[in-house]
Amino acid sequence: IYRTSKAVKFVTLTEEIKNPVVTDNKEDSVTLNWDKSEGADGYIVYVYSGGKWQHIAVLKGSENTCYTAQGLGSASAHTFSVKAFKNHNGKTIYSKPVKITAYTTPKKAENFTVTNQSDNSIDISWDKVSGASGYALYSLEIGGWVRISDISADKTSYTLSGLEAGTAKKFSLKAYII
Image (cartoon, rainbow, N blue to C red):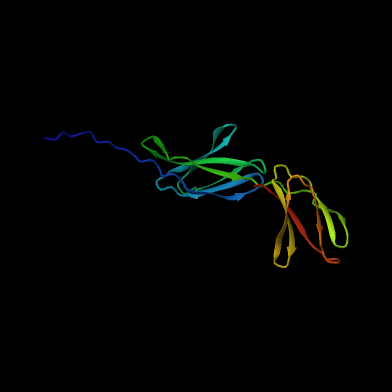
């Protein structure tokens, strides 16, 4: 003798996002991308700010796997959380959140200039870039830009020596964060 039990309906959790990456970093924005979650109706993006998670976007449709966060400070780290969601019978079901840490780029080194020169050396200087971990100095060579020196963040000047007299050179300076 068998007794019929009540049928139970359920929906499994939406698959969490996979392969989250930062695809673009700018001075005041970062772009996040991830793979499509099968069965998702969309994604919710949060940012950790002021000691708590803050909801910043709802992306509808499982194909919307890209988000650009704007208005961020330069040379700074930002932690985001993304979770997929599915609507079913008036209820929303969420995946586990996945965290992504992204860094905005530092501002450009302003007033990069030659302050002194001799036959085989030049002195260069620039304005300090807030939040920079250091500076990378590049020289334009036949194959393109070549990184020739790393300079600590507390420096705003540098001497290039051993240059060949009578030749023109181009240099570039980029602030970076680690």
